[in-house]
Length: 294
Image 1 (cartoon, rainbow, N blue to C red):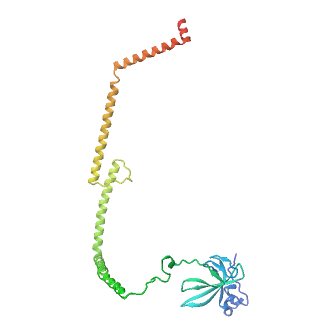
Image 2: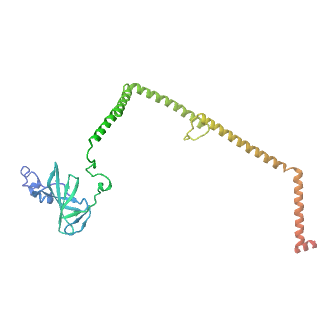
């Protein structure tokens, strides 16, 4: 575990040495500041794009990191321009990349070449990154005058009346906020009272007919009442048809169960069964022999 306490030697003088780094003759950035007297700081730099090394001609992918020598080489207005000098990890060649604040990008200045992967908007029917107006061509004084006249007419006939109407509406609604709030709260109370009465009546209906509490009852209007009456009439007719059919079937079954017809049918069935049994016993030799011995 790294210790956080600092050792102060006996000959350390705070007023004289100011800090332990000054006492030991070291910089606070350590080995990164070994070229600080030349204006160079060793920093960690990540390639912003794909490049080919100019010495070994090998491809180096975007995102590869190097211990680069960072140095300020100029200014673009008040923005500093930095250069990053890196040594290729595949050979002993050096390449340098600089910042370009004017175009907000990086450029390779020496030792390598950048892979061209930029999307050119001009080739795809757009405008350049810093050319938002496009190729307007030579200006026509008459066209400019007509454009300004149309803009003034639009402002006079459309924009100003619309702004005035909006200001009138704002003044009307903000002139007396208390009365407007009073009307809104009154309307809300009335709606709330009607809603509470409907919820109470719906709850009574649900409790009376054992309906689920989550069921939403329909609003009572002329169409709903008419539809309910029509459904009730159709259901009543279906019940009456089923009842009449059941009664007809019951009368038919009762007429088939009269005493005389029942006894006659039973006698006929018994006689036919007896004749069949006697015929079968007469054709069987063992049954017929036993019957003759008896």
